[in-house]
Length: 513
Image (cartoon, rainbow, N blue to C red; front, side):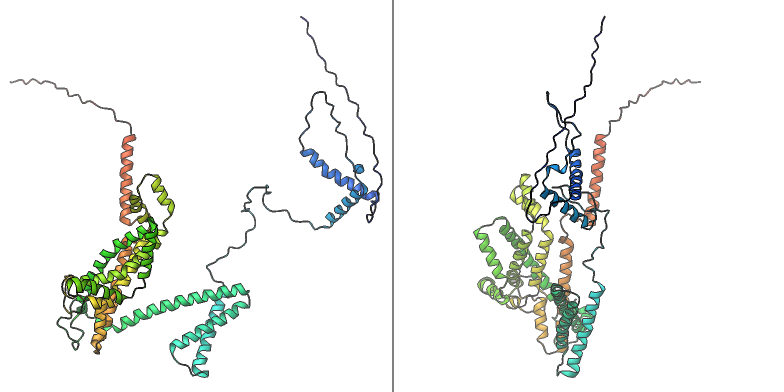
């Protein structure tokens, strides 16, 4: 058997030499012809620039019957004009004179990609936005000392001024001016405005807090003589007169009347106010805008007008006597617009995506409101009720016209006069006797404490944000989770093999001797 061998002979392709072309010399006005050294430098620069490009390009594809050019062809500067060579040499010289720039830190940035900061690079010190610097403390402390000194000089030496309130006003104005001056030494105009506005806001908060503390302290101090007697909250004024000592009589009937009246008012206003707020948010339209306008206008309604309205429509037409129920109706008129307005604002803050998710799951509107909207806004609704309660519990004018004044205990809100704490305070302090005035301040202190207790109870039961559970709720949830785990474990566990118990009875034979 014969084999055929095929031999491949490599034939060298003769190199083709390109003809050298000489560019014609052209003279450009204002351009100096390049020297041979500049031409050589430009040629070297072009070669350095073109070589990486040749490396990065893809290898050419060879088609059939196509002759490829040899690789030893070198591009020189002979194909460029003298003007281009001179410009290239000038740019090379300018580039050599530029200072070297530091390489950018981090990875190279890809065009169109998001630039991420390099965590390994140098990171400056973190700014503490809520921490005052030493310079700020020095400015505040120095301004306070200087303002106090200026106010002291004006009120004690240079000006005929007197009074503690005037001294504080002058000192505060001087503090603002000196503080702005000290900040301007190191900061610009925007910094001065920011510091001055911050000082004004802190000053407004301090004034408000000082006024509240003054009212509380003054009331407690003036009513301390009556508060230290146990009978003040356990007895009524049925057997006590204006000249009797503080060891006789009390305000128990007024406390009970206040609780009954405010309870009836809350029963009326809380469902009605929250339902109206839900209507304003869930059913927008012309009528809802009209209702919102009326409720906003009623927030500025004078309390005496509410009392006159209830007196004319309820007492004169139906009951023909003052009672605790009539007083509760007057208080409800004052509380209702506050609860509606505050609840409306809170319900607007509920995200629309929660409603849409509930609708997407097939829940109707009433179920969405009951299980999604109201639980989400629970803490805000509690605050709305607290605001309404604070407005109604301290009303005196409508209660004066509708409840009447009495010194005995009355548990029936539909029959007979029923006094409340604000009206009892008014009745005490109008007396010229010091003991009666002390009882009046003591009743005011009890009213403040009672309102505080009601607020704490309301916040404890309804003030948690959505998803925040109490200790008992968390414990019950953990127990339910454990029960579910046991049940699922029992379902997934393989069934135990059934065992049959075989009882063998062995007969025994008794032998009688």
